[in-house]
Amino acid sequence: MNGRDYVTDLLPRLAASRMAYRGWRPPPTPMTLTFSVTNRCQSRCLTCKIWELYRQKPELRAQELTLDEIERIFRGLGHVYFFNVSGGEPFLREDLSDIFRLAIRHLSPRVLHTPTNGLLPERIEGTIAAILQHMAQVGYDAPFTVKPSLDGIGARHDEIRGVPGNFAQVLETLERLKWLRRRYPNLHVEVGTVISRANMHEIDAIADYVHTLDIESYRNEIAEQRAEFFNQGDPITPSGEEYAALMAVFARHIRENIGAKRELAKMTEALRLVYYEYAAHILQEQRQVLPCYAGITNAHINPYGQVWPCCVLGYDRPLGELRAAEYDFYQVWHSPQAQAVRASIRAGECACPLANQAYSNILCDPLATARVLANMVAFRLKRSA
Image (cartoon, rainbow, N blue to C red; front, side):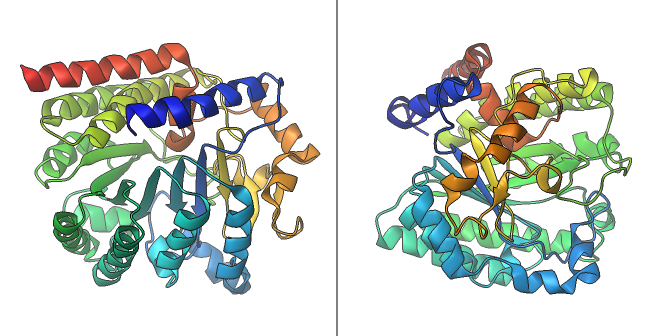
């Protein structure tokens, strides 16, 4: 995100979103689109049970959106700022590179992102290379961030993720991605950690290790009980006080290692520092510390064409079904059902620290955005010192 993009693209979207939140206009095109391309996953994580879904309901795999259906949805949706892929494990879809091509053609996102469990190093490298090659051919130089997950060091990661040898495969994936980064400078290699009660006492050591890996940025999200993950009721989430203490450590690592990182990394880290503080307050106070713009700034499409305001509410409070609406996103987006869900969110009937949504909430709040800008200034001053 550069200054020109912020003024000409992102700022008008934020202003329109604030007006929609107050009921002064219909919700605009979502700023962030998250698309869960599949619920298939080879991991057996302690924090997520999404992998059990197809074992219990194998018929669901055949119900995933096809490439033709995805194109119909994207064609009618229009330009979004962030395009975020999710899962399951995205790279289990063999047509993942085609999905990104459709996103580039029809959504023209300024930033593209995908996570991965890192269990398919060769396929991940080949798919990312195909996407980057396509971007180069069409002259599309938007940043493309790829985030393998690392929840522990060595055998601890394998234990938490439930797959022997996963740690070694993540390291191989990272090496392959860093090799691609030398050829494609718009590739940003990240690492993410899900902080849960299983690893919260190891975060300092994990952060120290990750910062030796020559990556663009290191982010975390807290393990949550989500309808999307079928883990509601599982005691996986640290308390607000525990998370606040962990984030103080995490913030210190970010500031110590910001160094000469690229501009996108500095901007995202500046935003995350503010997010970590707000997330701790949400957990401690169990309320929306900032107004939540889920279903306004952000939209989430699940593998079967259901539109959600966010993945936490997910199946419990969807906005509507794209197949029933003949793939017309805005018929769902502006439906009475969607309006009722937004009213529930605006009334504070839910509160969570979901990172993807919290970033948008921060950008919609002038005081929180000012704190992000202050962090960016501090990073610049540190580099020049």
